Amino acid sequence: MMIQTAADVQLEQALNHFDPAVRRSALTTLLREQTAPAVWRGIANMHCHTFFSFNAYGYSPTGLAWLARQEGIDLMGIVDFDVLDAVSEFLDACELTGVRGSAGIETRVYVPEFATREINSPGEPGVLYHMAIGFTQTDAPPAAQTIVDELRMQSAARNRALIARVNAYLDPVAVDYDVDVLPLTPAGNATERHIVVAYIRAAERSFDNAASFWAERLGLTLAACEKAMTDSAGFQNTVRSKLMKRGGPGYMQPDIGTFPHVERLHELAHLCRALPCAAWLDGSSEGEQAMDELLTLLVSKGVVALNIIPERNWNFADAAVAAAKQQKLYEVVELAQQFDLPLNIGTEMNSFGQPIVDNFDAPALAPVRDAFLDGAYFIYGHTVMERWLGMGYQSAWAADFLPTRAHRNAFYSIIGRRTPPGEAGRQLLSQLHPEMSPPEVLTLLE
Image (cartoon, rainbow, N blue to C red):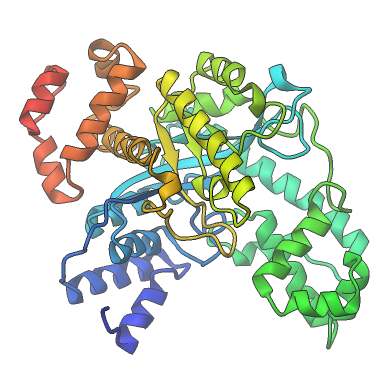
């Protein structure tokens, strides 16, 4: 294990500074001083939130790229809620650190065809956590930027309405969205988790000992509340669950106008030549029990990939629960393969206790490990081909030469494996041009 100096620790902390110039300078210094090559482990985490939405450990895009290098995570992808703020920074940092990177966006959308069925947003029929992956830059074309602006404004409006309801319930404790919440973010994109932190800090300012206040407002005994507050991460989750989730005073049941329709996110993806990506929770809801029907619908609307969070679908102490969850996981992976949908997998890192990477050596993941890695290389392969050549999955070149999802999946997975990150990869790709056929491209990259 590398022994870190105090200076190294300070530099790594600076990687997560809110000032992008500080982050970039820290990374440059670390790379200059730590010349030992990374030890890559053949693993991937393609679903990490950065601090531009919420990362439980405070990681910036640059900080995540450095983390991947230090931990030997060959492939890493970011997926922030409602913004593309991190895309360019993360992909640039991956180039420097030798990580195969990808970048996406996540939001909640409405699917009218499933209006009466809960899907992957608990207790909210018709509402779908949904994604687009494979973006190549933060700056979007004007029409796409309009959609990004809509997502950001809709999120902020929901947050302000939530705070108004919670302020009324927690009085005399209150927070101001602009003063107390937005400074917790680097670019003004707050989430419920930021709001929770703001309320806990507000209660600390209002009371010498806030345990009695929280016990009464959260419906806990004083002893239970005091115990819960000794675990700051767990207490944040408790506050969020009691105040902001279904049944809490801050919760408002969504309706048809709360979230954009799924087609709006797909429009953003296509304008940016990115990839609409469905998201699967655990197969237990009514909607996910009809996963064949749901994927048929979403593919007809443009979905070309499927996101899975493996950790919540195998790692349980109860053997019977674990076996049932794992079976659902295997079934959805098989279904994705039938639909020719590559997998985007990862741990999220937006809640304390989530691992920084899945355990690829876990016996429970052995049957799906190859599918996980194929999907990771696929999305990286698309990303570099689109970023440097405009020959990604949604390009006219791909439409001409790779007419089916199966053809494209296989091609971009191979590209991902054969194209190293950084300058070496760019030099390799510089030999390609749109007149080449896929076999010619692959032969040149051998």
